[in-house]
Image (cartoon, rainbow, N blue to C red):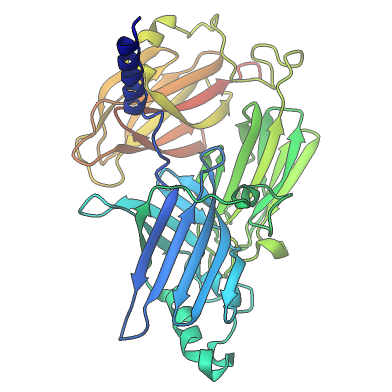
Length: 447
């Protein structure tokens, strides 16, 4: 191959990789900002610099504020709650605050940033605060500041607590300095940002056990970005919830969606990994008024302990499985990237899938594949729930949800509820022409 043809080949390969998104920039990483002014008061500048994420879930970030003579910057952590929401850490650790400190007022920013596009297609992050009249921690009184600082302090307090904050993306360059990676490492971070020290477990099986909570706190629990439980009422009695760890480091995130009737959140859960237990509790001093608690769990795969479908490896792939059809691998739609929504263990051979559109019925349709076999093609997603009965094979079952179109509102979205006797588990289905969703169900027929 001559030199000219070699350059052409390199160019074509680069073009291919770029087109497939391998060089695509993370949509959150970069610099975001806004300028705010009201009633002829001095302008407030707010900037959010977001670094590259760990596991596409944990985003180190820096928040900067400027108003009059006041300027400050803070380290914080953002945790992905869903495809379009980043939850904001309670702690915004001050790097600089000149000429005075605003103390715990940064807690007013607790909530999540929701990603969207404006009418011109510009990316933006809108802050959705967790509503609260009190936070369980002491807040500085603006009147307590010296007279020369009182006006600026009062303006900043009001802005952080009440003003609408929508940040526009101004740069795609990820925030990066010598300490940026320390924020996601509890042993190295300058403060507690909501991440608990990593624990190592000997089993892949996990169980969530719920405490009796007196308040109606709404919580969400995710495993590696996929929901285990989505926006549940922590006051209601619930059976223990099973889940399966991946090999390597797993990230379990416990989100407070609201603070219930008596703020702040008082919800707590207990995680059981056989001989290893861990409690995540919003009542603990360091988590009061927090929006999330993150636990890293390390599981090392041991082939001697785990054979095919034993209890520690319920979802391992087995080509001899009676429902496994190798021919499906070549089908174009099933070759799309799949986002796993969750794992379920059941003793029922037959389960029911309920599907509906909880927003606007916009012509979406999906196809459903289980263990390589299509059980529904071109299934219309309606406003009213529709039901499908699925017969499971013994052992692992892989259910894949594929977008046939995008409807009139992108992406193809719906609600999936899996009904297993008296148990129900709901997921948000969000697919497009490049991405499928999947749920893995282990039918434990020996129980």
